[in-house]
Image (cartoon, rainbow, N blue to C red):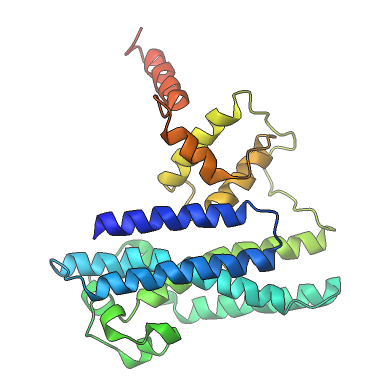
Length: 276
């Protein structure tokens, strides 16, 4: 299963990166991303329906971690498309509209605060109830998607985890959009953020190594690679290639795939006195 999921995730991430790095507007991007993710979701569903988990631990891991991290982006892009499709004209109306969307997410989270605390704390004592199939709680199950009705591919809370993760992204997006409206299209930085940007002195290729290493390790949390790229470009005053997946493909075929990261490691070891 791990091999299949890893391959599917890699292919999907590359497709989403291509969509996000395009010059299309947010409506077209979110619609295209939704189609890609829906196809991947259906593919994964068909695989799991014919797969036999080796034990309950593997099944819990899939429904607690693997499936939600596939599904949350589908929820996010579909909701983003609907938000932007119905976004009114006029600054004041947009502020009110986006604030209402923000409030709806906060209401959802407040109602499920106990479960959110359970999930974010890393607790496991209720996992068998929440993330094993065939233990359906009617109240939990009513939150599901239309395509989530198959009990062989759903548990009480896997959708809820995906919804929580998608809400994290939506909250960030909505707050940024409201801030832009409040500041004539300019996003201000939080207190303590350097007023003068630091300029990256290395090459773009070297920064791409850093960027992909951070993304691979989820150093900044479970955020899209394109969002992380935009932030890093702003902080380090540099413009990277829009086609992130192509840059990654170029890295993979080099004789030495990560020369910059290797150089950093050597420099740190020399500082520690562990290398000459």
